[in-house]
Image 1 (tube, rainbow, N blue to C red):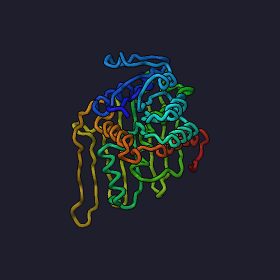
Image 2: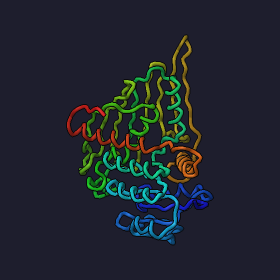
Image 3: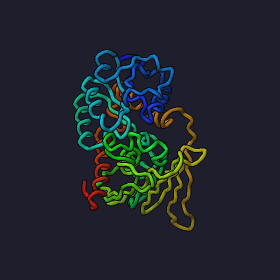
Image 4: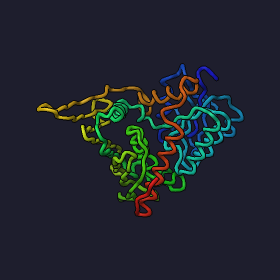
Length: 350
């Protein structure tokens, strides 16, 4: 392998493309961009000038045929993800795939099969798995500090369809297959499973177009997820805020404590309000504020940790990334089931 690793970037104008490239710039001694495939009809409107002289190929096939590289960051639309990833995996290239990786379960299964058969290092863009507060919550549950887990509630509301425009590929059912739940709620669906350490057993949901701008995919909704332990997880959110903004917060309740998580608390990298037992007259109350993170790029410090995890697997220092083909497939299945449960108006077991 090259030193530093040579990384090809597929999908220049992905909404997070520039953020991924800025993130990679934090580790120049370990990895560097060496080539690009624009994808998105050849558009490179967001390509930084410092990368403008890199070798540029129209297709992944041309990239593989003419360029020496070790790995690829894949940030393409759901319709094309399976063919791009299958081709790169077959060529033995290590892969970091922007979430949700696939838009349908059958595509996610094909990607898993291709990556597993190739034996390449695989990572996805679910960087909340590397967040300080998220991992503290995961540890609290694993150590039974909640007692019996009762409920997990997640709210995720973000900028409305008009911020990007209804013609954007994210709202095109032929390009993306689904809307808010595939592109954004997938983060929290993945994280609910990661933090709880449990699988989703069944789904009830209502999704659709709730805002005034109509598109062919859902702009949001709500889902009720039954976890393996019997705990219940709920998620509500959508493209519903009429400006560039976002609202994110969680509450986890157990028989012994409950915690409010605000990832966007000012002057922190997230805050946990922890409410514990009152064995006598003195109740346990605590606020934990994660230190401010000023790391540039998509996801900041957790994003760099995600990259480092991937590189560790590439170099044979770790057996697998924190995100795996199995966890990717599990999340895509839940998204698919949320859409199906709403369409059919019934609860569906996974």
